[in-house]
Length: 389
Image 1 (cartoon, rainbow, N blue to C red):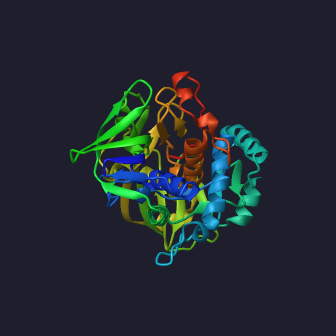
Image 2: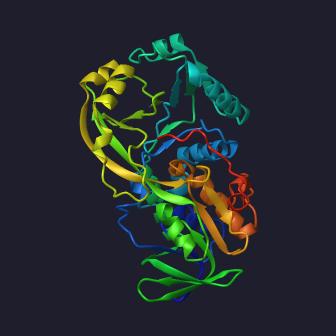
Image 3: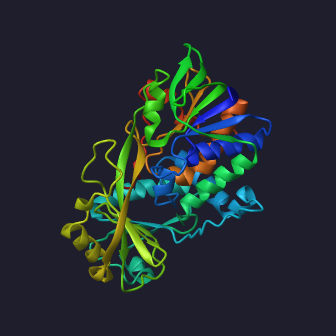
């Protein structure tokens, strides 16, 4: 193959979702995914904690989550195949943000934004929290924000595989190769160079390279402020059940949620250099962390750490928000990058928005223009304040 209509660099959940929507909206389009890690051993799509929330501070992120939860609920209808039914194990117990007295103003501000955007969230005082979650210590908690619906978690790798298999069933090709360069003028990309030695000419190019998006952008002479930010997830067992446990975000910064008969938890990293090896940072699990968990949930005093894994946030260091849409000069180079830890939940909506932008010149199902590349050039950050970990 020497020519295709669209080259998508990376076939993780963003690349797969974009390919799915492109070929669903225009079935005769020739779309090629180029992927070097076809076992997805380092892909964020395989290593994500795979949760979904509406408690953001940017309305565009709330819109993407609202689209995302509706898509997840009907995933079988969208992505199911005769030989590959879609089972995502979606659960919706909500997110619960806890705040101490000095943090309540920020929680009230976020709550106002979320309610204005139609999110089903409620502010609860200590007594209401105690009644709902008797296993939770709220003595030093002034306020909690709970998602009443449309928030929870799901099987992220299963969603990724469903997008990928459905896209390929619709005619998308996947090359086991690596993009090493781009041929381009000042106005467009004309071809991508492959590690195998081939050249793939194309009409449009999508950077869906996840944590490695900056390297791909550099091939076209574009600076993209995205870093591979390692996060460690610890798998915990607890001898006591925690009924109706939501995804809990503690005022100290750690998060925890159920995962089958276990719990998973993470916190702000101790080491923040970009591109650290994908190995768990066991230094993040220490007596202080254990004591903080046990303080908030006394039953966790008897917890056991079963195992841990590490994955990358594709961290947009500019404003912690995604970059979606075309480059203003290289008009056939598109981005779907930098989701900073909330990509899995936004993949369905982001992929649709980008596909519409590529085919029709604008995203029509939901407005995502404010996530465009131009804000980087003009130093107009759209800051997302609710970034977990």
